[in-house]
Length: 388
Image (tube, rainbow, N blue to C red; front, top):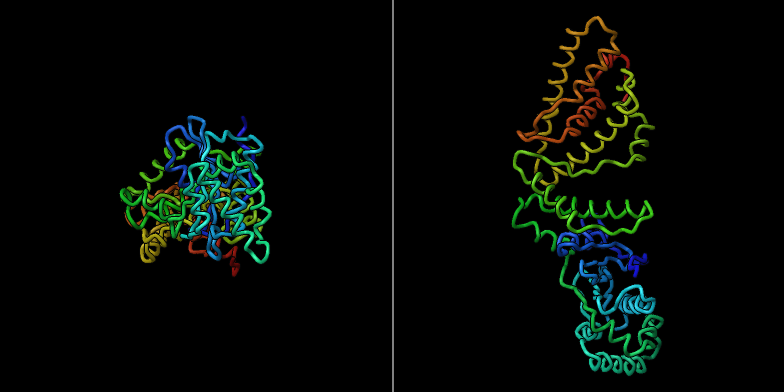
């Protein structure tokens, strides 16, 4: 039975810069049992696929401006109608399925909670009877009626099958908090939100890539946890600063290349290859993002960054001097290219901590962008008053 049918749902709200669905995807990936997979926008907003063949279908609702579990809420009755449609289409085995409505921030509803608590046929049918009576007392038909009618028209067997396996979960003021709580016992407090951002971003990026490639967005929980543990271990080392910035997409790199900022014109003066120019832009963007992320997390400070820039300027000057001594017989363009390539391999600590290789290279290009350094021996004359 194919349980990977794309679902069409969305949830508003931003949490650490992400919509609600990727946050829930990430949490399920970090907490799912061994051998489980988690999907995004296939069976439902998010679905947990367990190794024994059972599934958990979850709808997620961001309740920033309304209550999606109030008695006549469109969102609530639409959830039940969607699950009834899925059951009718036989795309899942009801006996092996659970249904969850996740709502944040915390909201309550009398009728929805009664259905969430119901476990027997008598419970469900008694509540359904009360809903019919309450509906008859309404002066006008509620807006949720198209979805509610589907629930009322369903057979008692179908209603009980769904409702008895359905639960509302609305316990989080912030849906990222459960992920923070997973990390809190083992990592530095200042790192927690940035590790959350990495985990949510990686889950979303992986799912988006699968969707773009025409594949089901189903992620392996064991693989995701292993990758995240490795990242946390590296990032939690006191002597190492781990990049939180993903490699920028090619279209972003090409866009900046087309603009031709000063650091690219510096590279043009020494005729580097196209691959080197692409790498320069990618590392420039990543290092800029890392500086911001580390500063926001309190991992680096302005004085340290200023001292770091001064150290890179000094080191680049030493490389220039050595290249001039050793390769003084070569053309200026060639000497500049040698200088650039030697600097591109440079390693230097920031506040005594090791940084990723792209960070040094990106920061050197940032310094070249404001003309504190240059690769061609006559870069200041050749660039003149040009700026970004």
